[in-house]
Every structure is written in C-alpha cells, then in structure tokens.
Image (tube, rainbow, N blue to C red; front, top):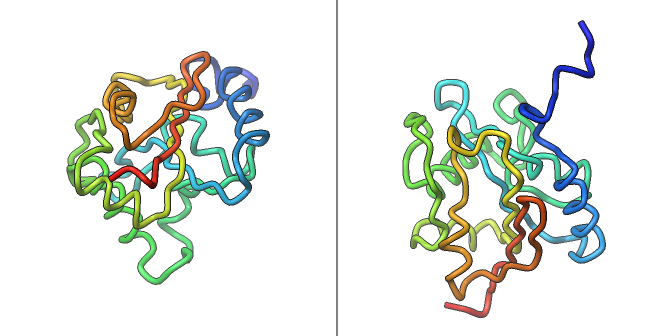
Length: 169
C-alpha cells in the first residue's frame, strides 16, 4: 500500500490553504492564543474528533486548541474528569449531546455556546477548509460574520479565522 495515497485532497484534514493560515497564525497571534476548533461526535458519541486542520494547531502552529488528540478518551487529561468536561463543552457548543450524530451548523452566539467559550478562555475561532462540509458539524460563519461578538481577521482558500471580541457583550 502506498502511504502517500491514504490522505488525499478528499480526506486530508490539512491542505495548502490551512498551511497558509497556520503561517498567518504564527505571525499574527500571541503564543497564548486559544483557538476553538471544529469537531463532531465520534465513537458512538463518546468522544469528539476534529473535522479540519484546527485539530492540528497545537502541533503545526504551537497554539492551544479546544480539542486535543483523540487519545483524550484513554489518557489522563489536564483536569479531573477531562473526557466528561470536554464532551460537555462540545455539547454546549453544538446544542445537542454527542450521542446525536446529526450534523449541526454551530451557532456560537447562543447563550450556552458563549458561556462555554468564555469559560474556556477562547480568543479565536478556526474554521478550516473542510474536506467533509455537509456531513459533520461546522461553525456557522454567516452568523459569526454578522455578530459584534466576533471579527473576521483572516480569510483565504476556505479558511476563516475570527477573533472573539471580549469587550462586546
């Protein structure tokens, strides 16, 4: 089997547009920036998995991301009950439990989602160039673009990065 053909343009989570965005992140965000990244329910609703290059930000950009590697279900996390805490966080964002696998256009302006973002100290939203746009959860960028709570700071090749406006109420 040729390993180079496993992750193609149809299945790779990181593409050229994401690599350009990652360079922008390194040059334009502080090292302590905290990124909310897209995810979807996986493994029968027991974990959340990344849906785009945002999942790779800790490794590729050196920035904190809201979703750690999938091993969070089998390893000790950064806090007691980490798996439950993270799953509850993702459920609050999507407005449905992880046991409901139907794709969601995630409205981050909902009260519960905003509370979860503030609690996690999120400062940026990474909405990557998705290989699976219709079959997994995705942040609703149309809502983000019209909300005074978020500012679009980067857009290229299907990647969007929003800054969370902490001064807006």
